[in-house]
Image 1 (cartoon, rainbow, N blue to C red):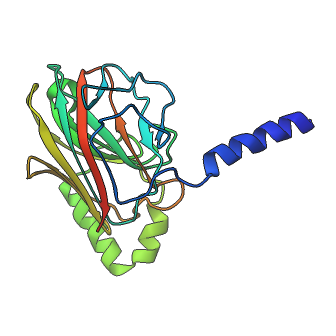
Image 2: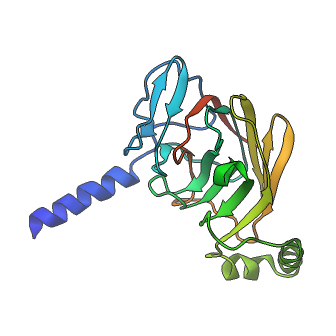
Image 3: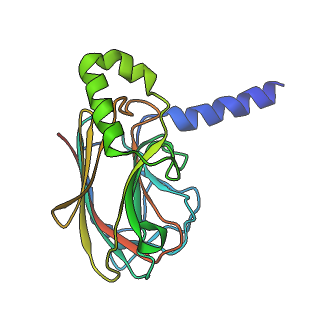
Length: 223
């Protein structure tokens, strides 16, 4: 019994220790992945100055750094697969896929792009629903924060992107508003009446399903 309790305590300490990196954070992937990255499988590695993956099957590569509530994250991303499917996660728990927001460019065999909250296969939000949510926050932001805390949904649009093209991604969050840009053009936006943040919702990760993808020049900075 004592041995089991000790093992549980060790596990808790490993998850709750001080972050191994700080924001602002920057890397050009010129060296192998270090202790600031939580490598829990997924075959992530650095090659020729890029982060590479060809089949993580949704085992994210989490950066052990606490994100500020308002943040800008930028990096380069390229897919060598017809499926494209360039993917990352923000404001997750640092361990589990779909524990925060999932952002995908050219997903579902290069047919749509999304920003998802807690479930990339969740119901898709309509423009009318977004307008209603904005009105609710205007009336009573505190009530909306509680009411929609566990909301699972997706903002999506039909979208076809290019393989073999190096995109420059930029993700920003300011309060309730999330925005995702590729090569300086707004791809998707998402309004969250109950923004995910704080312990359990403060980590960034690269992710991939089965495409051949490269990432580089990651920068994270507070806004």
